[in-house]
Amino acid sequence: MLKPSPGFHVSARPLALARWLYAVAALIVLMVAVGGITRLTESGLSITQWKPLTGIIPPLNDAQWQAEFANYQKIPEYQQINAGMTLSGFKAIFFWEYVHRLLGRVIGLAFALPLLWFAIRRQVPSGYMPRLLALLALGAMQGAIGWWMVASGLSVRTDVSHVRLAVHLSAALVILGGVVWTALDLRDLARSPLSRPARLTSLAATALLLLGFQIVLGAFTAGLNAGYAFSSWPLMGETLFPENTPMVDPAWRNLVDNPVVVQFAHRWFAFVAALAVIWLAVAARRLGAVAAWGSVILLVGLQIILGISTLLTGVEINVAVAHQVNAAVLLIAVVAAAHKVGRGAG
Image: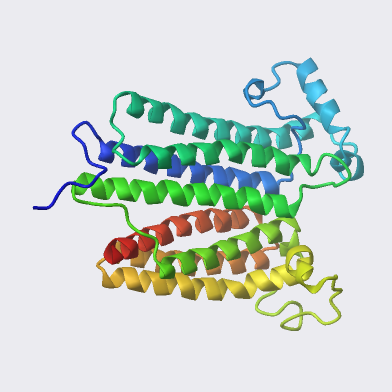
């Protein structure tokens, strides 16, 4: 006789938890969108202090606004790039950074408070609490990573480190992937008490790693403003790769620090990542995951179109943000395909 999964017990509410996690995932996608706008509007350094609790209250009067503006005027970005900015101009960039940080706090509460509620009522299936607590810890760490990123631009530099930006974005997408995967496991448990967590197959891991590397290249491209280097496609100027491009030593650093090389790599590695995730989607399709397969195919095509359009429009903000948001949605679809393959392999 088949026995229920170790995650099943009478008071557990796996479907309720799955729906809650889907809502958290939607908030994370919104966070990615706001983060993209914050980066593209050069708003990320407008708040020069990290106040996890009191920072939720914005300036409420002219004196407080002048104090925030005075703090901004002390950093290199203002002194070397935005000298002469008016208070109204400062308020515009402050808005996006404030919303970005506020949304981070909202996501933290949207995860922690329902988790506490489910735990108190003993509605978390057995074996899932450690995973949920790990995701909560990653979310808290993400706040610290965000400040670590901002701190890199408060002295000497006039912008944040593109490497730290990549870490910040990557951490957000790892959390997103973990939330979605856990929601899918819980959804399956709700359908059948015999269900066990899906396993991560080698095919899925490879596809996710290649997609992750492409996203890191995208973060480098954004952080280095490499998207502005060439606005033509498929050539960079008049050649596939521009001649006489200055290189840095050691050679591997060009893939991290050289804007021209980074843009070139981001352009063409996209097709490697695309083939990998399509291969995964086809494997999921063979197991009956028609929706996941169709979503991956559609989103991969859209992502390539948005990437090319971002270049051709000179990194027009709406197109560039759509490109970044679609990357997050594509990740969700790839995680769903990976989960289905893992379920089939289980």
